[in-house]
Amino acid sequence: MKLGRKTTTALSVVVGFAVLAAILWYIGPAKVVRQISALGWDGFALMISAIVLTFFFWTLAWMVVMKGYEVVAPFSLSFWARIGSFAVSFLTPSMHFGGEPVRALVIERESDSSYSRIFATIVAERITMLAALVAVILIGALMGIYTTLSSDALIYLILISLIFVGLVSLLIINFYKKMFLFTRFIAFLKRKLIWTEILQKAEDGTRHLEKEISMAFGQHIRHTGGAFLLDLVATVFMFIRPQIYFYFTQGRLFTIEELTLLFAMISVLSSFLWVTPGGIGVSEGGFIGIFAVFGISGSEAVAYSFSIKIIQLFFVGLGLALLARYGIMNLLFERQNK
Image (cartoon, rainbow, N blue to C red; front, top):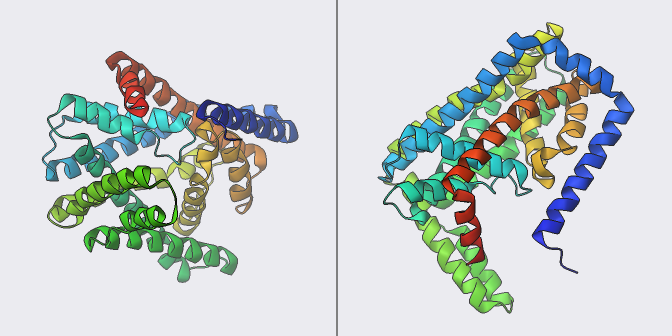
């Protein structure tokens, strides 16, 4: 029996809260509260600043890509579109990509550009963001080779680096060489499956989108390179979040290599957070395993996860309020129903 979207989402919420309740029951909620309290207002302020600056530089990077495509959008509109997109992605089990149509709809409504072109700028910037993440991990991995990082940790770091490098390389080569692998894959499915008409429409739409995205790695390469540099700055603010938190709660200083390994492992974990809205339960369980490598207790790991979520939920509320004010959610539902 095929489950509907609402049913699937509801089930993911129930599973997520069940996992979270089991974790809190095991480690004790009082310990988690004490750990969060230890962060203090100064620590929270720096954590909030790091997250705001991440959004700020992500927005600038996206604006640079849009400039290459001659999509005109002011910073304020682009920033709030980012926040609205994040809010939808946070609440929707969709591999962190559920809110991207919202971003495109916000800009489409306020500009003369087509939805497909705007969406192409979003995909192109997501690729530069992933490339920036890979660059930071690679730098740390190279540093780890010449330091006292344990052999087991170094192997994990190198393995994660190779996986991310392979993914980014495939995406960039696909669009730079105009191989259109996604279009070819849908064409292959069309030949093998019975849903010819549906897959033909999907093939045509994907081909058009891939042609638009390929422009970012051809005629707009200068803008794409600028976006990569800005995404690199945004990634650094993501990179230092654990350091900020554990410095204020424990007075602990990680080495660059340790932070890199942490960042790499958290990046892999984030690939699975889409299973439940906001990564409920999944993120807490994952953080317990990741931070255990560094001798950090389960209560401290869960407290770190909760601290991030508290800040993120503020942006989720803000994003949803802005989308509701401008009627963007209605537009999204209307487009999905067409």
